[in-house]
Image 1 (cartoon, rainbow, N blue to C red):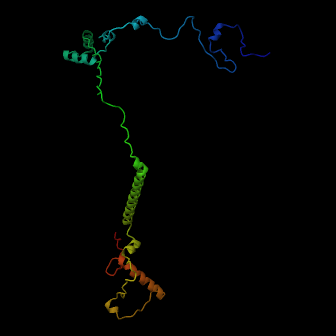
Image 2 (cartoon, helix red, strand yellow):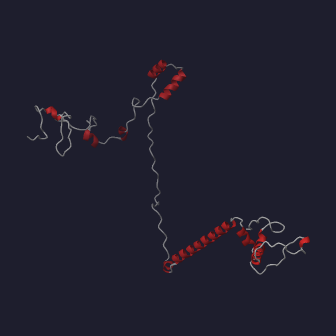
Length: 249
């Protein structure tokens, strides 16, 4: 025996449609939970306003009759004004304030209806944006606008190149005073302008010959002397053997 989806044990009652605990959804469909309504039930809010209907809508009424002034009962109470009046009257206790508010009723003033005045527009006033002036035809034929644009771009490139060179010069001036920068700033442009001066010696050793040779070869001594002659302008001291002088900007 096959059991179907709507198989129930016991008698079938109409209340089973209202009890959601025993309802089952159909195969492939969701469970529909609805409530039975009384016959003649309508949806929406009931309109109880009696405004006269279509006849009153078609009938013309004066403006003063349509604008209804706010009645004092519809306005909210002005508690600030009541508290100020009670304080002036000397009423401080809660019971006295309750009696004072029952005898004196102060309401807020109705909102003001400010009618905006229409701005008067002159008769000869025109709206919109002015039209663009026409370009002379001979300037268009001669490609004057193109030439002006090219000249402007060329001037802009020159200004950028000049600005780039100025920034590069400023960056070079901010270099640290190393031996290389000192040699470059003090080096003579003409390498032939060298003065062959003898090495400095004390007076008592001028006539004495060399006894100790600290160089392995003569070429090593010549290279050392040559380097000292080139680098002595960058060192401080009486005999150019001190610290390295800062680079000159």
